[in-house]
Image (cartoon, rainbow, N blue to C red):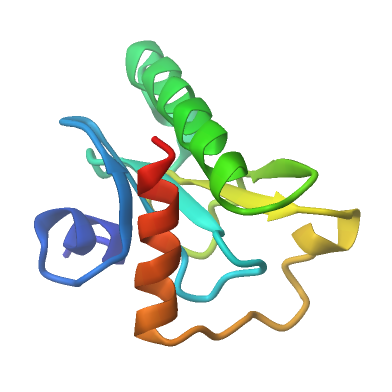
Amino acid sequence: MGSIFSKIVAGDIPSYKVAETVEFLAFLDINPLTEGHVLVIPKMEIDYLFDLDNETYVGLMMFAQIVAEGLKKAIPCRRIGVSVIGLEVPHAHIHLIPINGMNDMNFSRSKLHFSEEELEATAEKIREQL
C-alpha cells in the first residue's frame, strides 16, 4: 500500500499543487505551520530522503529551490525555512515554510486551518510566481 503522498501523486487524493515536473511534486500542507507551507516530494516513493540516489536527491533540492523562490515572492516573509523530518509520512519530503521568526518552524505548536478556497487561493498565488 502506497503512502498518502503516493496517492496524491497518483491523483487518488486531491491536493493543492503549486509545481510539478515528471519527477517531483510540490503541494500545500493541509495542516500548515504558516500560510504557504509547502511539501516537496519525489514522485518515486522512497521512505528516507538520504536513501535517494544522487541524481534524484540533487534534482529534488534544485526543484525545492525553485519552489522556495516563488514561495518567497508569493507569501510575505523574512525567509523560507527548510525542514526534513520524515517521521510523519513514510515518503521522502521537504517542508518549505515561510517564516518571520524561529517559532514559525516549531512543529509542536498548533497547526493552522484554512478553508478549501483559502488553500486554493494560496496555491494560485505561489503558482503565479513560478
